[in-house]
Length: 511
Image: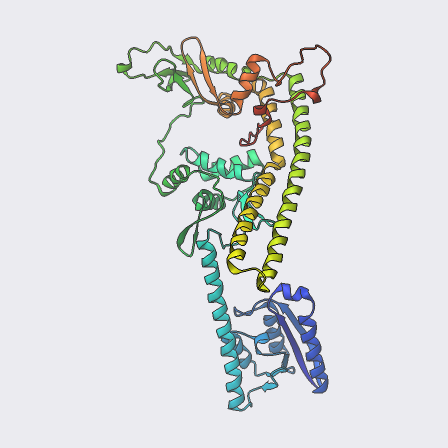
């Protein structure tokens, strides 16, 4: 009895999971070996494509045959199970082995007739042609996807996630703010890649390598486009940053935009403006240690009466900005409770809406399938079928769009953001008074878009949604209605203003 090895392969892990291809091959080969008095000393089984030379199971078999010179027989189902490229064929020829292709009733060794080797070579060439044709079809299909605006490169990048239900990428509310923050900061010209890496770790708790951050900043996917095979395509996914911001970042990366070198970094630069003339306040160091802010308004605006401000004095005055959005502790608890109650009510309503839309979607698809059967049986004319099919397709797209909107509105991070914004407004002032000027400026930039000053007063412009909180704090009216009949009020019966219920829908505030 001679020794031999058995080799079985399926083209994908999906075929292996189906549970019939590999067992069927091994059973066939064992039966063949028993009839031919061949002892199977090793089995090599794998699930992978043979389009590239070198596979784990194949390589292990070659290594085994090189070490065991007494085993010279390979049992395999047919040619395309063993190899589909000429390199693997030449590798086995160099081993001087006897290959039994059971289903093809062929035995090939060094003494085989030229005709048998010719037939086997034809099988190998046909297999190679199959692989080449398959590669062409895959490339054609991927190019077609790209032209339709679908990125064919697999999983979307940071900031997106793949919706398996709708089978399309969508903005990931948990990671998209990281991408937006990276672009916003790098576009200022004041942050290096290393600075961005540290900032992402501090603010978001994520560790990104510098090369990955660099790739993110160069990826046109974030403006709704993508590059495939050296060509730019317009995608059908939602962008997370603007074209203008992306272009500005590319200018810094390419060296077209060079940030001005600064000897000193002043905390409140770019934040303060003259009330009379609208000019930005600049900072200077006097006597080597004192920082002063003053305006350099052009003379054609008239003489500027704005005095110089010491950094400590302007920092103390800016604390009024944070006092203006202060939410008292008891109001914060009531607002938070109301938000949670709103969340429960919105969740119940949203669930009911989703169920109704899913039922409608099922009805549309069932009607279309039934009508298709009727059309194929000749019971519905072509023109009527086409008209109804287009109508159902439009209705289906509308229902799917509504489901996507409800899914985005269900994002749990929105509720977290709302609570974080309220908590920030509650403790921003107390954080401010204990921080350094640089930390104070960072906190103010979360709340302010700009601030005009004159000799005695501040005129802040709050960012959304802090402008809404400021209006409510100024009037002390935190609820949409007051009960004219004075009686003990319960927090859960109070309704939040619409604008406060919308807090956090578009803004993330790191605490």
